[in-house]
Image (cartoon, rainbow, N blue to C red; front, side, top):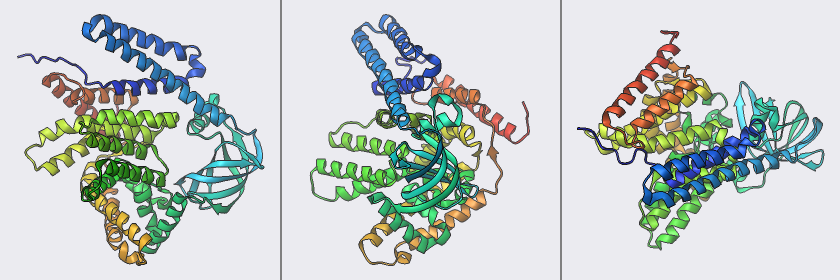
Length: 507
């Protein structure tokens, strides 16, 4: 018997707006090449698509179709405008190439091969305010919120130059330097986030010594203190626990919901406290796109619960994407944004059907497996394309370590809160996370010795793979035979990339 499909795709109007906004951001990125087509293309696309749905769709939905098309077109234009404003603000204060004494606050720190790459904001060039500066290859150890004074040769960035320089301006930097003659830490930012980092780092160093960066990264998403240790976690595929995202925000949201549920105050006040606490935590972590995404989604869940409405994950994800991209449109091109949203979308649409396959297992067990499978399926191609590797052992590593990491996170939050409020020794307050982190590091180092790494996943094949799992998901209403066929082909694609990575086949 043939299955009747009434609605091929489970689109949401807000999702269409988010996609249209992304289209606008992408079009502006290529505006130097597209020229006037930057504006004409979205107009043509939405006229054609709107006409198809208007003339061949349901007559009773024609007004809705026209309205949706108009909103989507406006969203695309907003995306173009938001990206243009972002680039103009960055480009407005780009200095001329030359030697400068630059003073700025460290806002982004990464460590690679014994050197630091540092992003500076609120920069002053020879006494004049200017754009943010990105600095490559600094040998001196620096940290977030340090105020640095540099004597260096500065190169101004032009968005039309392309390559790595265009990448910098897309990330908010109007200038760069890899020729630093001298650097001095002259102070520290006077902010709550800076003081929080100082206090927690001091506590973590007393407990774990050189490995303090693991706790700092888990709590605040700052991996600079981990140095080369983070590489081991990346190899195993567990480094995502150091990017403050859905897991961290979700754990805090769950804890706050439980605690506030025991307090006899108005529901509106509880919702306000919960959302405010989540935003504050995201601030302490630098308002990263992954943390903002999770905060917005959890806030939508809290508001929906307040008004007795059904929470919709796709709507919440779309709303968070709109907010994040309006604040910083260029995040659309970052690996972190792409990976974060792809995994979250995959969990929403893939976890339910996968969970049904394991319904014979206990609820908590089947839920964990489904979320892990969905996230790993989504992460595979992106990890290979952006980071050149994906560990097959990561599923086992995540299944074993994620529950422990959740316990460590709660223990760290409680321990830090105790040390901030009460005069209790850090070795006592953080004893549990100290022991667990030592165990997690040991297990991770063991898994890192297993050489099952996929290093090849051609972008074209990645698009085919994502199309297959999309059809197999709950997002597309296709016959079961079609879904099963897509799953089989997707598995074959993964096997092909694995065998090619292992050198078994060369085609």
